[in-house]
Image (cartoon, rainbow, N blue to C red; front, side, top):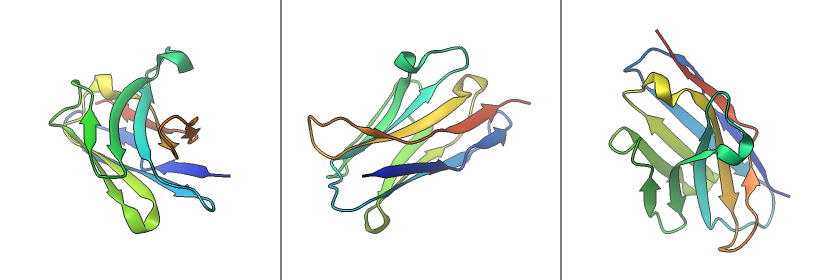
Length: 120
């Protein structure tokens, strides 16, 4: 069984920064890729938006809305992925979730989410 725990969310003013963490724990799993998603207020689970992904090889991908502001990175030894968010905007307000793929076509594991609120 794999568990994901997100942390680092909070309230920040527009233009501010936050760093989210997602720690994966469990036994015998393979890190294939991990993603950050967000669910904006009033949106359903099925409407979660992909924010960024990182593969086991270090390749990254970002939504257009966060390019040049957000950076995803990974600390291999601790199976932890980070999302550095700079120049935050009110429209970034959402619950941020991480997920983990242990294989290319497997069902991902999800964390419980962490709230990010951008407001003055």
